Length: 636
Image (cartoon, rainbow, N blue to C red):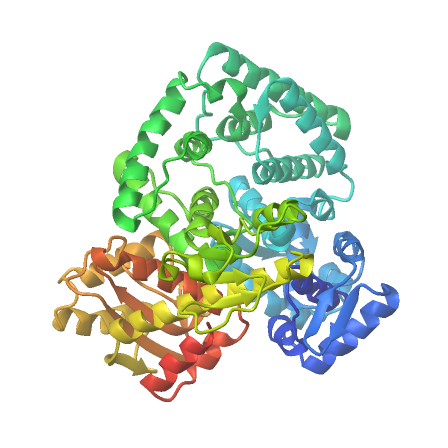
């Protein structure tokens, strides 16, 4: 059993809330289903009860055991090309300036010929950071800027730990001689004492940055001068507080790791703190930086409502988001990037919310000239998503009529039952009999403690007169089923209206994703559905953030400004490379402002399809337009 592979299996299972089959794991790990089953059996022998199996697949049963396994350091020789690549790069970027090729091959238990083959991929990756791998007298070394070296190390650690970015023990395995948990405790204490707040991801980024310069300093690597100006907090108290907390954190670093923090590294710590901290005083509306961010927020709220019909006017949301905007603009002015390990998860699980966030950053760019990357887009999606999901939950509630006889013997039970249903239904009234109801057509369902005689025009859920826990569970299941059916009915009507066979193709001849956009958009323009600049606007949207969501791409302009609503579909059962993803279906949207509700419904529906492993690939194998539409609707 390969340690790297078994850890990856546990990592996959821990990241999923549902059962996962051996074949699904195998496709991600790159081995057979039989190998996955053997590895899981071996894992359960050494970590009893950690993974449970059923006819539905596998899932983590003992989360604590899984976390311990993933946090363990391993002294095993790297077994895969990817693991060997990381080992080689860390040796050359963090531990030694030069390494003899023969020693490296021996430590990896590979031949010099195999090492030479793997160095080809490493050279290619280094070039992306302005670095070059050199060989002289049998020794290997990396040539380039120290800034590029540190940036690559940061990327390597981020790629390896992004699913568990906030777990400091996982980051610590790259720096076994440094006590990063104690460093985090001291940083937290200093920040709280000075009245500062920093979010968890920014704190993890700061600790990684500190760990890298400490490790490199201890191994004789040079410090990297900061080329950007640190953000200056508003107000003397906040500015002095930043200077003091920077000094205290650097003193803690020196004390913990028995080293001197150079002026260059001290400036870098201050820069990261200045661009990510929120001071208690910045919650005051009179703060000028907060005021500027609040003005920008006003424009965003207005534009989002006009474009999507979403209401973001909420005092708590406006306070939180304006503070985030102020820090985001500060980071941008410093040329800093805040990484978001949840980027892909947010993008694939909530494509509509992510698309709203893409629109928001376009507003920011037009108002301030500041370009925002995908990591920052995902943070905006978190803020907007919390607000929108709350509104959507209220909008999705069903309206119900309760039929029961009020009796003081169980008056309290009725009230408690109705309170428990508040999350999914709005009770319009309580009547003793269905005949006494004024207008039954105004509700979505009837909840009755007695059997109803005759025909009822709306669904009826019969429960016991005791309003038990079983009744509550039954109600929630029925409400979820009714909401799902309503969504499917509405969406099916819209799909059969806006999807047409005229704009449907199976594996069209395209050179790449840009060519696909050009060839799928042309018929929409020629048919009078989209304006002449439709293709250019599609590409502009892709420049901000790829429209690929896992197995599917949904290209569309930033604004809904089509002549008529239409959807163009192309299936690629063998896959089409789309930016950094491989998609099996392309759904291109030309949407009018009047049909923006369909836009949101379709995105929300697609997010559900994406959560079903292999669903899009199955849909992409449809042999006809009708077969495709039926397969898509079956995923509801």
